[in-house]
Image (cartoon, rainbow, N blue to C red; front, side, top):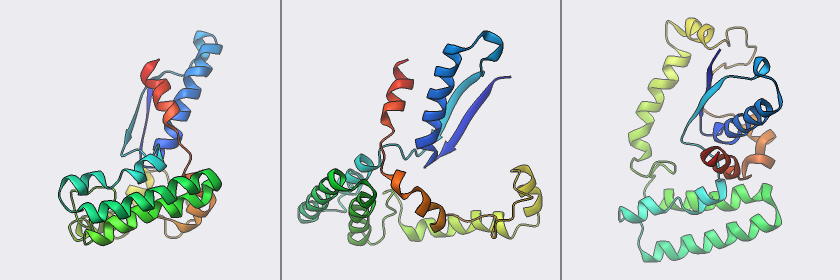
Length: 186
């Protein structure tokens, strides 16, 4: 049976890896054992964190939100990020995150991952999604369709989870662009 892998954000790390491993597995097994993967789709992939964080200022710069003085500060923060990467990959998340924090502060809360909108534009949309997954009269049907109806996690839905982040922090800044290159050029 053919199947597709899909995800967004942090899935930009593991889905290309899974796809790579499936392709490599298929090279080693007979035709009846092959997994029929047809494609992988990833929205807003978090694949190359240091590059993504050190270049996050490009859109606000192009929109005229950041000026030359701001760009000098961004350059200093970028240098600290890259220096930390050579010393401690886990701590790199905070150092590189300082670039996003700076851009957001200077721009009066431009959303760091999408510099075309501001937090005050996004928050109402985010609330609608949160309400669907937490307050909808169909919430139990939604959980069932997502196969989480028996989850003991409370709440079952949240946008972020600090506990999960703490367990992934040592992997957060790893670059997975190798897998993208492999998949594109195979």
